Length: 225
Image 1: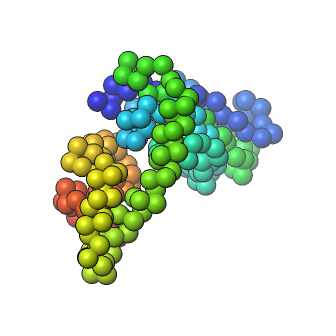
Image 2: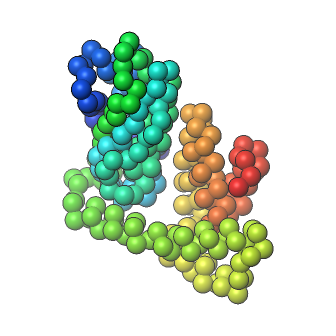
Image 3: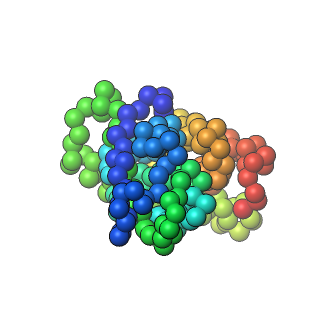
């Protein structure tokens, strides 16, 4: 399902004060970068379900060994697309060839545009996307209430008399078995890519919404949190 999604990725790199020949190059060239990003991107679940497209600029620096550091989302819709754009840029670390004399303090900006599957989503509706983005941001407080509750519960610090309220919040947010299975698939895809950090983030999220479906993965692969 994830592999069937459509991505349009802008492959422009902007650096300050350097000619094209002096810029870092992804090993194998632009097409190799394109292929790498297509292979690595896992369309985030909320944006996938709500057919949200967007262009995210990620700024970063590359050291003399081609390692990415100081990666930041420069602009984006402020939702899960931002996190995924940042994640895949970090995965390019070590894949860059650095020309002699390159200033490692130069900031590179890589725009990545996400477009959902047009066969499923149809023509983009700006109004629908804006509404979905607003809903995502509004849900963050509810999500934080859920994850904070379970995080404290595992530590023996939660007020368990409020669990019924938390369960209702989970229903409101759509945190059912289907949702959890989708996040598991997303985490497993990241793990197959060698991104254990990204997978552990998703597995811990599953645990912190009160499910034990990722516990075995956390015990096996993730440091205690």
